[in-house]
Length: 317
Ligand SMILES: Nc1ncnc2c1ncn2[C@@H]1O[C@H](COP(=O)(O)OP(=O)(O)OP(=O)(O)O)[C@@H](O)[C@H]1O
Image 1: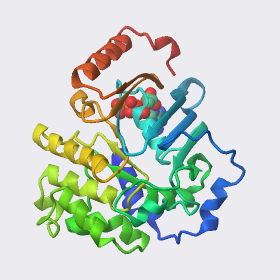
Image 2 (image 1 turned 180 degrees about the horizontal axis):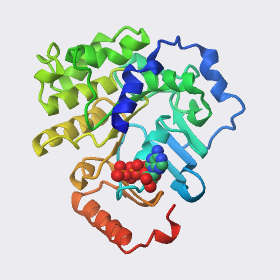
Image 3 (image 1 turned 30 degrees about the vertical axis):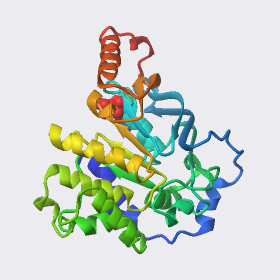
């Protein structure tokens, strides 16, 4: 089982999905004793001095070396960088799938029950209470489960749909597991925007790769999450399906007000984003707005050359 499949299993199928009623007290414990952060207008999620080390002694690896970055609401951000630079670690730590060694991860627009703000009642993702936040590094496992279920959407490279269920059942899975009724209007808007009308009764094996990924996008958006994380969402798709999926991700940001952070190796995929961050050796080394494929290729080539020249070798581990 790959790490990605394990994560998907954990999020959508595993014991972690045992229904837990979302009580105020459960999650409120995660807010106790927190100093207010420096609010950055329009921030969806923010890493503050985020450090992640793996292993110990000779095996110590500094995957994140004190990362400070804020991701805006209603924006599409790409994270790029050479293999092993820390992209997945950042995403997993921001999403509460991996614990931080030190630092904070502030998720904004989430109320004290970890269930998102007033955006839950509208067809837009933007919460009105911009300054309500949770430091997810302070939450326990049950609190993180609730938070992920209600406020975070995930899109994986290998779709991770459940083969025995229809497209509609897969889309509704996060709500089914949470014991929540679907907002039919939102479901209709999502399936229409994603071009899934007429495909809802099909099982994953009856859908193309691109269609399966669009079902996975709808599943990620169905709970109107505060933030959506996409890990190489086009990694298993041909160029036509990739372009389709990236256009839908862009539309979900433009038209549905969603906030998307995508890890990708593909400079063309990054060019669909409003902003692209380049990672190297656990640090941000470039931050581009309105990235072009050419500019991102150039930055990635430069980083690859630095890795090949051993520029990070003295800091390795
Ligand atoms: N569970 C783990 N245990 C030990 N080291 C790990 C673990 N996960 C990641 N690392 C190490 O942390 C560093 C960052 O890894 P990470 O997977 O975040 O990089 P990445 O940029 O996402 O790479 P890729 O593009 O290849 O997926 C690497 O040196 C990696 O070997």
